[in-house]
Length: 376
Image (tube, rainbow, N blue to C red):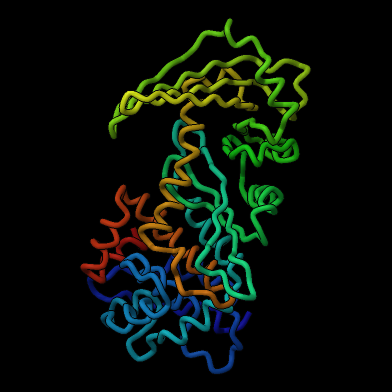
């Protein structure tokens, strides 16, 4: 291993916390540059970039400007110095050549250890998002599949795929990186695949899959079950000018249902009343979780919580960070920037923030606040 990938022993300036733990982790990301002539360590560049994104930076130029304005002791704590502060061009060239998958792996593992489980079980949602702003004349926009912790809102991993159609095998590849023992995995109907179910069950986890028309035989079997004779569990919520009633019925999966690990099947009915107009949606669920450890209300909560990956992650990246209009399009840049946004959103969620836009403004008001976020 070259010396350029080894984090120096930074002294901690008085009154300023050190990001040494994070820097040690970032040192395991392969440096794409030739060792000779390196002026800025890769861990310092990455730590500065994360801190800048926590202050609202949306581009390499904004990251460079944040670094140029930072005080000496702050830069030292982040693995850089005033005499060796990375410029915008150095940041852009380095991050565009980075091994984005390795960065995702390192930061995902870090966030896995920083997040925690609720009730002894971790629940993970998986879904993909296309970074539309990164599309060029010669290259399609990258499609990124993320793993999202329901309870904490942390992103535990991310994987790039060539197109949305390749999401199914990518989900299995991403899941293979995790310790799934005691974990519940939720996915949308696209990923209701027996191979995915087998991977989760054999790894010691449980799945909750939605069954729709893409699995016609399984869907027909679920729909034909005697739901009229099954007791219902209802929950009604009100807010934003509407009333939502969620009704769930759960049955033991019949032996003739051919799906790996299936233990229970549920019917979930969602009735929304708004301005006097009522709409009803019925979906079916299949799960490997047994009735002794999983109640109907837990199943309903897991299904509802799955959409947190859309509302608490993808929507934030689109709206708060304006990701789809980002001008970062070179090399690994789009995926690396998405990873930095994921990390910042995760850290803010873990710190208790619910409004990410407010949190970014708060951290932009004082340059020491992003460092405190990284070292909390």
